Image (cartoon, rainbow over all chains, first blue to last red; front, side):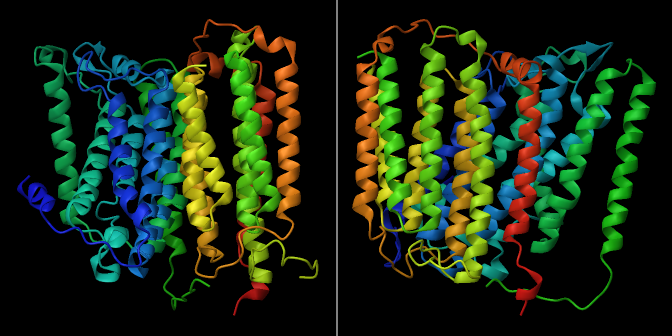
Length: 315
Length: 103
Length: 166
């Protein structure tokens, strides 16, 4: 907080060669795009800004504007480092947007609605004492894990923070920004992280609903913010734990592992939908996920034989 | 002037802007963008006729627009791929300089 | 003809006109996104929520980024200046002006334009999904095939050929 206020008073430096208008507009667009997504997130029972009929689509549409803002920031600075950072960031965000969206499609299939309110309402029912959260189903758990990895990459957090890898390209696309504009980028990064975490809670962790029916006396918004706090702490914990990925590992993870798994998850949720309720359904779906998961990760590992690395440079 | 007339006039103007861009720009990528704009203007027509037409429950305009958007996306991907392939051969995206068919 | 419609129309026209006339190709794409967002807002104003959001997702999120990447890869970002318009620009501009004049004349002289429905139709995503899965299922399957073909085709086209490897 003090840092944010301090940054207001700092000098605002703009490089002489920079494209002044685009350089100014980029952080503004980024913050606006990050704020737009919050309109459709229910933070408690009947606590939502806009219950849109196609709420999830709206969230992803708002999120896709961030990519353009990142590119504007990197390009307008006219610096090689910031341009490289922006290209990395945009390529990464586009690649991980596909698993992010596909991982949430399973929930849409199960609920039959794009409205975030309907999605939470479908999870806020109780079977004996346990809630119907989607994370308690095999496909829901898989979807949740894939969604969290994609969300981590989407918000450029460590271990997916190549766009701002200090050791290679100093600070990425916002290297030429200073003062308040830099604070805006920082704000936008955290806003994006909180928004995707809140979406993960809405989709898989039952939104504002309590996990057990006897805990229903605690207010709904307290549940929501409690879950949000846990997820944000996990993000920070992951950031401190894992080393940074290499660029080819990053792209390989998105296209060779996460994309096939999310597509397979769609088939599993279809099977789940048409089988009778019971333990058998749970076991069959779990087997349908675990076996391809093992085969896919084994297959990918065998591909990596030790060999002399060849480098290909951009033309 | 009724709202429908306004929408259709606007769409005609946007179509002409896209056409002018596609016919006059030298950069091949911007020519492609001009074509995209023309497609978008047509989409606006579909939506306007759906909204103000006699039978909105039939959803025909919406469906046509959805299909048109997906075709436009496919067209953009293939078109930009072609431009990249040409650039690799000729080292230019200037349409006035792309005057030989020999690779 | 509300004030909202006029503002959105002005935004869309300004964005697209700038996209087609600016010198720097990257500026053109950025202006284009303003125009595309204007299109999306126009769709929203005409009660087509689903199409409006799809427009933003597809055009701003994918097509504009793709075009920007293509411009960077072909070095068209203003570092090698070339004239923006072709030598025969007046012919193209003239054709566009004539097309607009004919279209406007046809629109304004058509008698059916005055008779419009005033009640907006409330369309939910469920209805769109039902229509896609029942009445329009064949076009949707063909679209899926087309998109797959386009994906593979674009990859094959953009991949550097073997003989060109240094």
